[in-house]
Length: 157
Figure 1: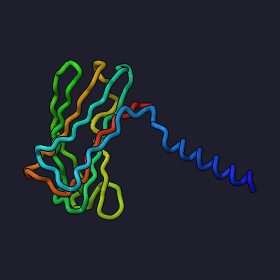
Figure 2: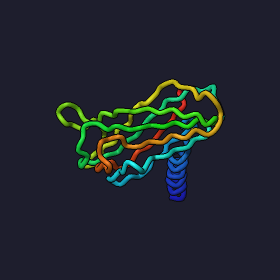
Figure 3: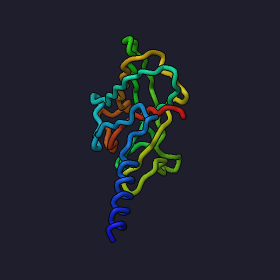
Figure 4: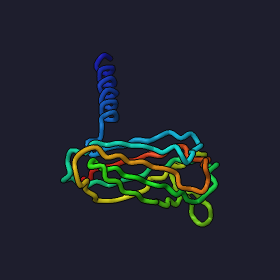
């Protein structure tokens, strides 16, 4: 009986270690909680320290929205600040629903999650701290229905 308890304990401990360990290939995977109301003046700000410029990365934008979101797309402004203080700006259109109004994201119930590929196989040009800032770019001062916004940068394996 004691060996069965030890086996169950060690198996449980193994699962905890396996699922709680960090993915070495993920540079950043963070989200900002918006709670269904995203004002134009509340950006999502994400900082990451880059130490290796030889590796390739894929960049993702994660959007979680609820069924109260009224639009089929979402415009987002992205500002990237490089370690040398240079800044680049992009306007992104994210399609969240098809022509029939069916949500493209995955999820059960009221919440849908969209993982959008921004760039693939990209290298950071210089070492140092990068800052990624996202603003909603819709024609509404306060956008309803967005739950959170996040960024994931993952090393290409």
